[in-house]
Length: 632
Image (tube, rainbow, N blue to C red):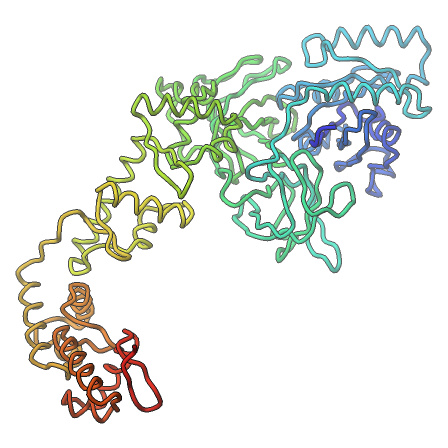
């Protein structure tokens, strides 16, 4: 059997036997709350699991059917590979059944089976009639041609056949990717004494491991995975498609809540404004109005927001259009995510659709270029999707993880972009990095502008440090990628790098006033020899303010006119001569003391000791007790 994991769920009206059906399939009781057992309905999500006849491991989500708990139903439907539409034989299609059907359609669930439960409560004539009515009611839904199973969860009739049917349902289910960044919408949060905070959810993407660093978003809260459970069993790792319980380290239950998402840090966008492809339900009797306040459901999250229609003043029932949602709180929202809208009050489902991406700003309405951009996002043309992602340099592997395209398709599109001269290829050690030409050119311009501005503000520094430049550019790359690209840029001749500093290709022309002060400092220090003045006093003699003296000193050190030793600055020629004198004496006497060098150099102990320590550091000499000898 293939090593992948499946998740199916139930849908249907309250009291149609969804929980009882799951118990008959798995032997697991999913109603865990006292109130649920008392009232006989599911309030929160319940979970069970079973092994199908084929050997497939399947998780099952028991979602509430009561209209008051549709939020929980939406959370449960997230990440399903298929759904069982449960209809009681004695009641047939009911209002909540229809709303669940609408929600499943909006969430893009495409695989399902119809389960007529409680057949032990009706006779054959009624059963034949109810089947016909159900088939007619489901004609324009995803269940139009779905298999239909007759069962009694109470007596067990039809349960073995249903298990085989679930196996068939999952034969061609689209595989979730266990590679790339992790993403787990949280549907439960609780605390266990001695362990701390535990969250549960369905892992949509990636593989999560014990010890792995993760982020809780929104909120940018970092934590680590202390332990993992799948189906109540401790595991070292969990893969996409599995129901997972995660024990998080160093985080309290009040810092994480249902609706937040566990992700690989920085892997998914977070924002208050999302671009949407929005559909108003055919069953609705009202239009969706511009600026209408709604309940926005994505993953396990419910957030209030306002609809910002971009093509319509109002969106009539059954119609689609591009829009934005302006949310009152941020959410994690990646392209191709499905969402559902519910009326603000009273809460009932009015529409939904597909997320096209997180937007930085509210878009202008009725603009052709805006609609064209969203149409491109909606269509998902591989060339354009890849080019959009390459506003930052990325590897083929990273593009695979983000776009869910195979490497062959990505490679073909990259060749096309290169042929059109719209892409640049850089390197990250042994891996190629791809970057659109326009984005790379914009990066170069910004980089050179920052260096120029820095030179204007600090002309004596001769450039800007790599790390300061990274901050100025607001680069989010790894340090390894930053260092690779900044060095390659110098190799390509866009700028120069000297040590840790990035410089323009042309040398900085210093003002005459600066040159005169530098000349004064050089002359003053050269005259002083190995007993230079302190920097503050010597700088004042040359007309340099106290706040700027280190700038001038740093420049002279970088130009190798001065040497910085233990907080003192010496004239370079004087230091070279001192070294010659030291080596000459050691060649004659084999060893020297501090007193010997004070006499030779004509200096006080204040200068002699730092100089000798400097020559030790330079491997000219080495210390043996109170003496120095040549380091040979």
